[in-house]
Image (cartoon, rainbow, N blue to C red; front, side, top):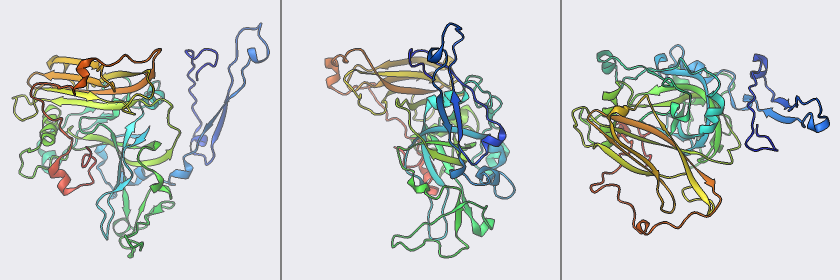
Length: 432
């Protein structure tokens, strides 16, 4: 809470609701009053007008039984129980693209996929003063049953021993958080749980796609689930799992830059070449977005121990805030760098530069160079802040686009072509 009289003064209020209120069907209303300890004051100088806070219930957008309960028990597992990192994780952010039911055909619907640009301030507010994720472990995931038998996987503490930030929920495989919702296939699982909304998919001519109940299925989504669109700000809770790097190389040998990248990270930390995702999610609702958006971007670089592969030893990249252009003539680009200790060996980073470009629009220039066997990952928060005066005119050198290095190499796209050919609904497919 910010003080009206002094915008730089604030208070943090931690409210722990009783169990009956947490799961109740109604919103919870709180009144917070600011009381002065100065006995000489009276009236409003002694006690402020109450701040009214409403905690919205998730009941309108959740099922009677959480999807994560069903899909991590018995024969209904989508991912093995050992893939689970933490339950009841809550995050917020902006939907990257509209909800997509990948793999649709006449007789089945795959999981619902979409991504989330995380809101870093929401995560700090919710996790900075609690320790519910301190014991969570990223387990390492095999990409096939034989790999699971041959190799031991590296277990990584989710928080890396530090405070929880937006970077806590990201790995080298993706720069946004992948969200998936399982489909309940009636033909395989029988009667769906009560309260789950039936998938009313239609063909192009408007006729129901699922004419035969054997192929009908139920999604744990609110009835108006397709009202969620790209750019919507949502709060979402569910099971945090680790997915594998999907190293399904057609010939057994990496052929694209993205495949080499996944392979390199698998060498650095066996089984951790993939990403984290909420899968399944238990509840989702639209919310009011923050007035100031802080946009996250990830920079990662990996180099094989023997120097093999086409990945190169350095990266030069320019990162943009959202929106990309400054909102006002006096807007200044601000940033915060969060070097990820879980995926960075700074002893093998031979050069590391982070600076704001003086060109217009301002962008963040990040340069990193690695020795053999080096690896580096950082999450960058970028936002616009109004300054006291207009930005200076860009120098003459900005008349031409900056050239990062004499022999620039394209930034690898995190797209595994072999994996995407077999399963185009994967979150790293078709994301430019």
